[in-house]
Image (cartoon, rainbow, N blue to C red; front, side):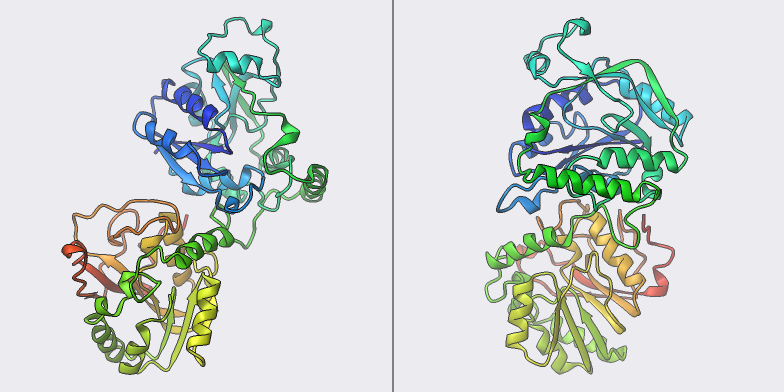
Length: 472
C-alpha cells in the first residue's frame, strides 16, 4: 500500500459523508486506504463508512470507548496515532472529515511530491477556513464555489496538519503524537515543531491545489470539553516544557486502544454474558462439555514436555482449568485477565491461586514460566493487538507459546476492533505468518454444527519465531 489517509471523526457524520465523497472523487493513481477513526459515539459514522467501503477503500475503527457513560473531549492525536500504527501505507495523509478539496488532482499531486521528497512535508498550496458556516452550508447543499474572494473565509495555516502528507516511518521515528497532550490545543503545534527538529521541516506545496476547512462548530464549545481554560493551560505548559524533545511516548506503547478502553469493552461483555456461555461467562468454549476432549490432551502435552509452570492469559473464570492442573505436573500457575471483577471473583472462589488483572496487549511482564497459555484470546483482538501479544511473549522469559488457531487453509482472517468480535484466525496465514508449530492439538470441538471442527491449540518455541514476526 502506497498511501494511508487517516481521518479522525468526532460526532461529524454529516461532514464525514462529504469528506469521503471528496476522497472518492479524487484522481488518485496509487493504491490507497482510508482509515476513519470514530473517536466520538456510536452514530451514523460506521454506516457511512460501510457505504464507501469499496468505492474509497474505507476501513472503520471505533476509538471512542471512553464515551460509554459521558462524552469526554480529547485531542484527535490519540485517534491519529492509532491510524499511524494501523495504517499500511508507505506515506500517510493526516486529514479530517471537514477538508473540502477544490480540485480532483490534489492528493495525487501531493503523493507525487512526497515520492520525490520522502523525508519532507507535503501540503496544499493554499487553504481557507470557514469560521462562520455560511460557505460550508452552501457546499454541503451542492453549490459550486467559484469565486473565493466573495466568500466570508479566512486564510488557513496549511503548514499545520489539516491536510499534511509525509512518510509514515517519519512519524514512527518520533513516537507519533505525544499522548500526554490530553487537554485542548497545542498538539498540532507540537507535532510540527518536533518534525522540524527531526530535520523534516521542509514544506513542498501542491501548486494550484487548494482546500477549504469546513465549519464544524465554534472551537471553544467542543462537545465534551469542560474546564476549557484549565485544559488549554495544561497543554500549553506541556508544549513549552517539551519543545526541545523530538521523540515522545518513549518506553510505552502508543497508538493503541488504552487499557481502560479495552477493559470497558471486555468488562461489559463479561457482565452481560456477551460470549453466551451456559456455565461459564468466558464463553461457550469454556463450558465443560466443549473441553472434555481437550483437558486430557493438554495434560498429556504438559507432562510429556515437563511443563511445570504456566501463565494463563487470559485466564477467564477458571471454569475448567482446575481439571488440567489435577491431571498434569504443573506446580506453578498464574492467571491474568483484563476484567477486574472477574479477577476478584476468581480470588474469592479459588483461594491460594495467583490471579492478577493485566492487559496483556500493553503489559508483557509475565514473569518466568515454561509456557504462555493463550487460548481464545487473539481471536478477540485486532491484528495490531494480537501482534503485540506475540511480541510481548517474544520478549518474555517464557519458552513456549500456546495459542488458539484454526487449521483450515480456506479460512480468511479478518480485522476488527478489540473485543467487538470473535473471529476464527489461522495464525499461519496473513498477517501473522507464524511458522509451522511444534505441536497442534485439535480441541475436538463439536458445537456450531461442525463449523469450528478445526479449532486447535498450537505450540511454538520462542527461537522458532525470531524470523517470522514483524514488530512494526
